[in-house]
Image (cartoon, rainbow, N blue to C red; front, side, top):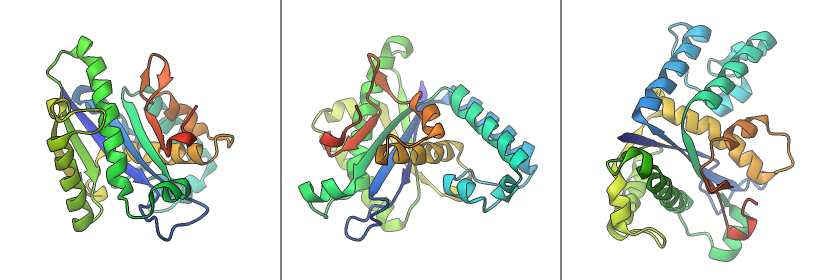
Amino acid sequence: MKCFLFLDECGDQNLSNFNPDFPIFTLCGIIISESDYDVMKNKVRELKEFFWKSKKVILHSRDIRKCQKGFEILFDLNAKKVFYEQIDSIMNECNYTIVSCSILKEPYIRRYGKLSDVYSLSLSFIIERTVFLLDGLKKDLGDDIELNVIAEKRGKKEDGNLLNYYNELLDRGTYFVNKNRIKKYFKTFQFKKKSEDITGLQIADLSAYPITRHVLDKEEVNLAFDIVEKKLYRQKGRIHGLKIHPAENAHK
């Protein structure tokens, strides 16, 4: 079975000079089978055709919140209500699993310093949990599961560094998952531009922001997270798809 892992981030990787009001970096992964992805793409296409006809619009959390770059239609409260109902329906009804990692910058710097690449670190956590998830699916899907990673392009240097780190993980494994278990599932790693209109990257983006807001303030009203939470990877009823680092701040 062919599956995808779509990756998108919320927040920046900067550990030296970051916004104290947003001291976090989140990498969000959407894991979905090829057949379920076809369903998701069709639903998103229908949504876009309903609101924008033939105009190309990319679902982006910040643009939606700011009502910009095509989302000016959301200044109309009736349109906004229908749009959110349809987005919520897609996020609820499509079959996919979320594995995310949030780095809390202030406690991380106090413990480890400022030299780390938090994107690569987050990727290693996501790869581990993805392996655990796929191991659990073997009973139903069999051993022949092929995973293809698609991440949003950020820049030539950044993408090159990330790809090198990914290849290192394939060669050496992680602390909890050896290289053979990773290579068993992970087959390709690609970068795509936001402008290429990749549905999986857009769903990852829409999931990353409410996860980030939840990690920063669990008491804050966060209706989007109420939907996203249902999709988080679980083992025996416990959430394992919401990694928060450093560990003492982990989700209860």
